[in-house]
Amino acid sequence: MTFDLIIKNGVVATAADVGKYDIGVKDGKIMMLAPSIDAKDSPKAKVIDAEGAFVTVSKSNEGMNVDMIAWRSRFSCAYQ
Image (tube, rainbow, N blue to C red):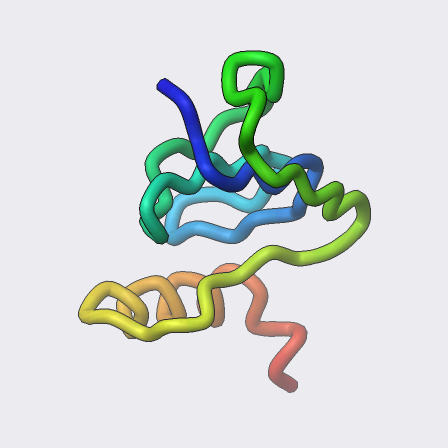
């Protein structure tokens, strides 16, 4: 699959995990979340190196509340 945008080396939090992932975006939608995405497969993609940064979505959706509940329960010490 080819992407328009690849965000590499970011720290991503999901409802199930927190880890270092690459994100592949096509037509404004996240299409892949993987430990490594080879940018050579998408030669026209803009590549952003997010090393050491947290990567989050900027638009809320129905699943966001569930994700935030999981985030808070897993990392509750951050909210005390």
